Image (cartoon, rainbow, N blue to C red):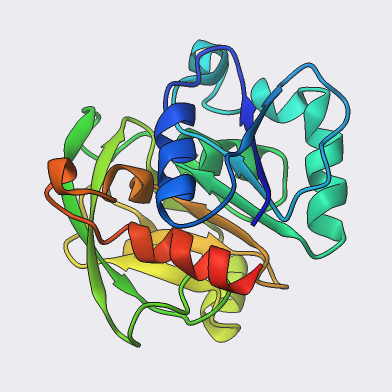
Length: 218
């Protein structure tokens, strides 16, 4: 699997993401600067966690207007895979590649702890998990409270686009949503960090199956 990781000013999980992808069997990812306008010919584009542009204005809002995002949108429109984790998820909603928005956590406090999520949907990102499996990923965010209007929420649920759901809701997200996909299933946004659950030192390797799912599919 060939991949590229977009780096914004303030990204801080890009090297974790690269290690997860290579551990899963993917080729060493290319790093692409947010000010670039073209992507290499890759199967997966990943938007990593962090605090792009300091999360000024609104988390992900400035990054979503970066020059590279037009190429990311074109990549997604061709049916190729896009994965946004944490800040990357926020960027994808701000870029309207995914519906809904990420608001401040309900407790208005930064959240940093392992969370358990249930794998709700098989597909490109999750085929290596058993149906209904639970996974433990670290969460580290201040704006992870997923919100969507009732009509959008009904469509997401009806179309099976909720890919991950919290076992115990840590941030107030509507319907315990931790991750959603676009209608084609090739764009996924996920709030906790599977790239930080891939080897023994992380205490959980549950995230490795997400990246192996991608490697096996792409």
